[in-house]
Length: 413
Image 1 (tube, helix red, strand yellow):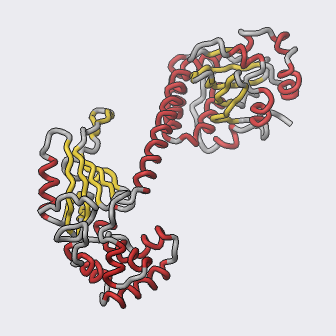
Image 2 (cartoon, helix red, strand yellow; image 1 turned 90 degrees about the horizontal axis):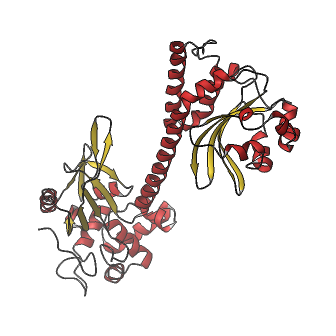
Image 3 (cartoon, one colour; image 1 turned 180 degrees about the vertical axis):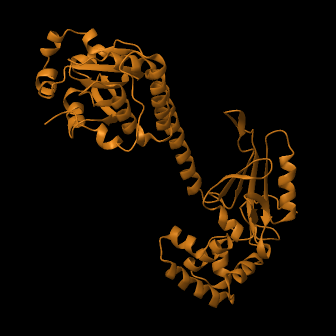
């Protein structure tokens, strides 16, 4: 059993790599190191390729029998380790190291005194005789012929250390490896920090998308030209219901008065907001909230990327009465509560599939309810039903038109 696997030849045989010169030839070395730096930054956008990048580094810089390399977070209090990337390690090595030796062996304890960016040779921080007496060497590394480590301290965070570690037998010349790592170390540091930042932003963006998609109304982020920068998964149903029009990723209300109010808000230089009811097909109404926000910007190479300046929501928010009150619809047409809920949902722009998903029933069950609604209301299509509900006389709490909320905002005229 060996700790190191002959990994490089098998995985990289299809890629011809520049060869690191055996003598100290600066121009030739820089050509090789520049290629490796490119690989390192490519791994920022493709984190799954870090293992391959480590394999390229070991295959290019390491002496014979130094095929293993790994990047890990490690701490001594409490002792723990988490491998970020690895190459050339036999099966089970990561698990044994994490469970038994993380943060508690001589190399780990002595490495922690060095600063970020340091390239450290274990021969420089403890004698071979001292290391040979350690349980870490006798019970773990000795059977594999490993008694030396070259490491790079990459980062620190809350007591944890991030390091690139390359172990191997001590009877090899590692000067070329250390010389290359001194050049690569700051690039690996930056790449790891950029990767961490991207991952954090991806998680935040994913959480924001999930929250937006869970909202019971449509949400649009627009720029000043009404281009849609982002929209949640309920957005299209309001287009199908005839409240908005989306063409070439640009947003517009179908109701002219509503569109004018939106355009007037765009001209406002200061943050402001509007609340009104827009009108769709068959005079159906829908509540609208529009916020003019301070536009965010992000620097990018050679320019600035601008973010949203308008946030538009359409539909009923939690606590609002649906487009047509369920109990009033049920009483007026003699519908069952389930039929009235479906009728109100359709009037709000939902589809049968939307209703079925929200109520955890089959689409066939929703269709069965719709047949009962048609029979009792006299409608023969969903469009007729929506128009019929929109003309329903107002209830006790609303004025001359169908209410959208207990305290309805003004309707755009």
